[in-house]
Image 1 (cartoon, rainbow, N blue to C red):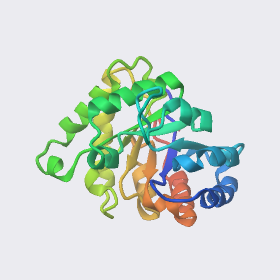
Image 2: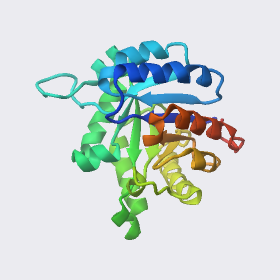
Image 3: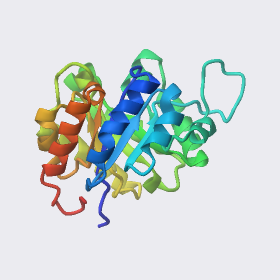
Length: 256
């Protein structure tokens, strides 16, 4: 089994100006240089270019939080994958729960975005996860499987994709899936990916990740990293999460 990449990704959402982003990266840089994992930051569009320049040589990858599936066109307010790569973005979040539930993005729309991202050479982080009513109705496994299979249809090289499981009921609520719950869903996701030839894909957990729970989550055998929301806005909290994740037990077979 190939070793899977360990990734700690911060999603800044609609926060941080360019000066704030640069100060964060300057402080994070020395702390990320010797880590045995990758640090990703999904920053606002306005900060991508300068953040990418500031992150050069610092073991920090800068990415975007969304994109359109078209290469260009009359789509006011949208941004294309090739514009993101031109600005210096190395990855893009696709299908985040806020995009699905606030902006009405469907699995079919996310599928088209993912294909365009791959075509454009930008690494997609595909977000999947169930709502509270879906979990209460015991539909969480079926929902996540449908999201995965729809988004990944026609994808020939799954190794170029990262998956993030984010239970919607845990996003911004302070409620976190227990490490056992996270492992159960990550194992389910991995079994689906194995059936598609992508068993070595990294799977991140996202959902009220904090310094207090990072190590316990990362110690699970099928949790390869974390997608951090609100806590990634604080340099102190984010560094503590990265440190906790690094100190967790990463010796499970298949994890690096």
